Length: 179
Ligand code: 5GP
Image 1 (cartoon, protein in one colour):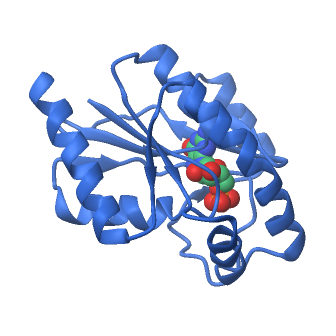
Image 2 (tube, rainbow, N blue to C red):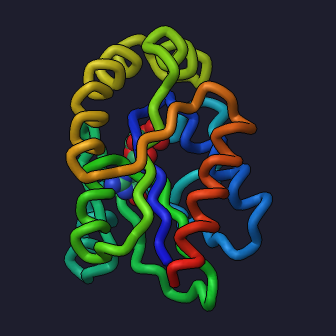
């Protein structure tokens, strides 16, 4: 099974997926590639950081399950080489989610949204995005939420981390029963 957690920047997707993985050994979190520069203080393992030619060469080799350009940088999920019996967990933008759903219509698609614009802006500011990045990510958020809804994603408001993780675990458990 594939679980996709999508939604705008600053809604807390990263924290939520880390919690899911910590609680559920059956989930296997894919590590994305990006051409974005690491943020100051960002975990060097957060992504495979590559330059554009390396990313494009990987596209040419059909090395991505999906990829998308997001605010000028490329992001992609490498084709999973081995995740055994695990369920694949992806934390990706809405354009990437659309590609996954096209290839895997039975994927569980979750759209995480912030409780308010103020909260979202605050999260972007405190994780080290520049003022320009905060402004462009906020402007893009409305469009991303609309696109996620169009895909028929299950929308979850992330106002309390524990409650959000519980809700996602319940959705995953319910979907597993269908398999
Ligand atoms: P950030 O620069 O904030 O780390 O990520 C920007 C956006 O790209 C976020 O919405 C994040 O979820 C998304 N993203 C991260 N990895 C991937 C990926 O592999 N594919 C796609 N399509 N989006 C990704």
